[in-house]
Image 1: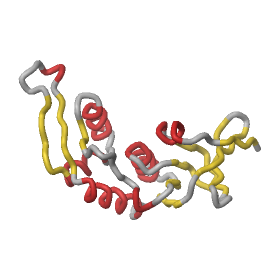
Image 2 (image 1 turned 120 degrees about the vertical axis):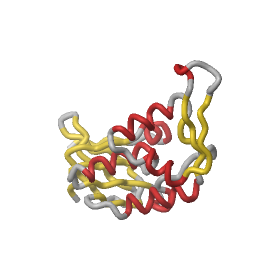
Image 3 (image 1 turned 30 degrees about the vertical axis):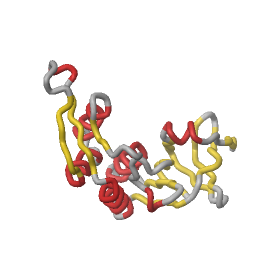
Image 4 (image 1 turned 90 degrees about the vertical axis):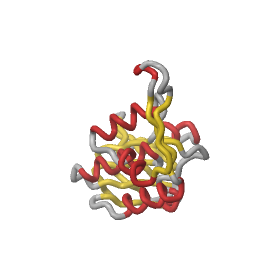
Length: 164
């Protein structure tokens, strides 16, 4: 099956990448192990802080979804280090983990130009040094002009590479 873009992983980075591509009229495939867990957070349901808060603001400025989803599903909002100087202040929100996951999953599943494959990407296909697709554990071959694998996936598993 052919796509413009393939994104592997349904976490924060995968969702942002997939939605951005789909909203740019690119036929996009999101490959994730379990569609039910698209948008699932870690055991600490905080969005923000000194580093991630800055990243969320940049995503928001570029039209990303994480900030909007946090506004909708937040349960507590704080400014960290409020008694200190502006350079070390940062906003942080605690979110309802279940509502956030359901919101993000529904958004992804109902987006135009975005398909979801509930599969495990096992092989990365390359041609002339460029990634051209993935092969899943079900032996489905997905081809694309561009592919994105978020870093967390790379560190969790080792992919095999197939040259065409």
